[in-house]
Length: 445
Ligand SMILES: NC(=O)c1ccc[n+]([C@@H]2O[C@H](COP(=O)([O-])OP(=O)(O)OC[C@H]3O[C@@H](n4cnc5c(N)ncnc54)[C@H](O)[C@@H]3O)[C@@H](O)[C@H]2O)c1
Image (cartoon, rainbow, N blue to C red; front, top):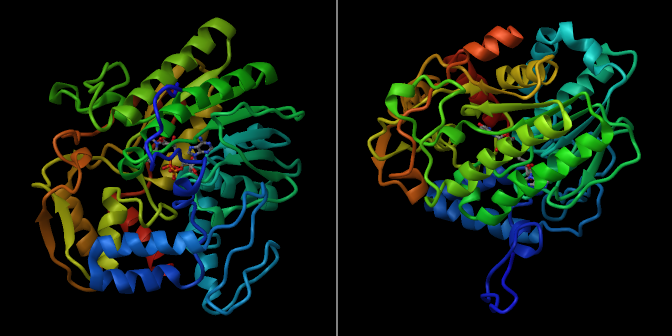
């Protein structure tokens, strides 16, 4: 709780409350990303960030609770609110965020792999928090596709986001998929029946959770509690919490690949702790609601999900490499690049999430990821380089922030045998293929 006797420092800001949060609530006009890339190419990353910030300041509009107009390029009319608006020419670049062939292919593939589960969607109502983030938006695309192409009895969904890191430009909303601007640290009420809740709101990128540590803790703790209470009131059939592989911290090498029973090696006070500890607490609360009130909770711990739709300015390692690659700049490795990760392509992650949500087992927690390969950051840079039609260098740089330096976990690789055994899930997209698809999407922007 804020201390009322302590004077608020002049520039203290709470995200979601006022200006600074809006700095990352982006409405990016057509062509802007390309323009930013061009200038950033001359000025380096800082120039890129400054430009994004200055643009976002101009691009702000009032909180309306509805998808708002997207400002057009200087001198042009704004893009229409109407979903039937079909931007053309340069404007189509902005629409690519919402309407990409790579994403459409992924959605068709996820839907095909989830065929045995169609009855779990049919006529049901979902509530998804963080619905316009990277993972959330794929889920929304999937529901939209099922409504348009597959189901007789449509899915309904309540889609919640406060855009602290989501793109407002990516709002999909129609008669059945209904958007609510809502900060989940406040209770949410609805008269509708709700069958499934997916609590995917979170501040997932180290670049943002170090900037917004309090909001990060709140969404994982207070936000989770509000969603669990709603799940209890609505007597839902399933509640899924997106936790994180970060609950394992920097695992002891004896526990890599890491299975779900490993307790973790997590700093309480380090720069990552706001995220890691809030996910750990969120999990504990989910299990308390399961044990006390029988709320059918399921917990997933995603390991480095990547793919089309991830924020280009997210600063996680893959988007960061790809952003540099597309500017034909050297790929920057923080430190010696020997730390390892295991990357999971988005379509695999989304399929796994729904398999867990619909599993009959409750009170369970699952790693979600692709263990093969466990790859060093240096070798990952070469995978990106090899996927390009031109040559770029790979360079080592000093980590720009403590969150990427000593506290960066050294190894990350999931043991997914529990997920495989209980849900039958198998990863399908290789790292090389996933990187090619992600580069294709970034090139469309
Ligand atoms: N992408 C990964 O590799 C990964 C790995 C581990 C865990 N996760 C978890 O999965 C979830 C989704 O991740 P993502 O990559 O899509 O992240 P993301 O940042 O792209 O999306 C999260 C969304 O949550 C919204 N949000 C944040 N705080 C909110 C609040 N208080 N109220 C309402 N909305 C809020 C953001 O605006 C954003 O749209 C997160 O909880 C994240 O911690 C993701």
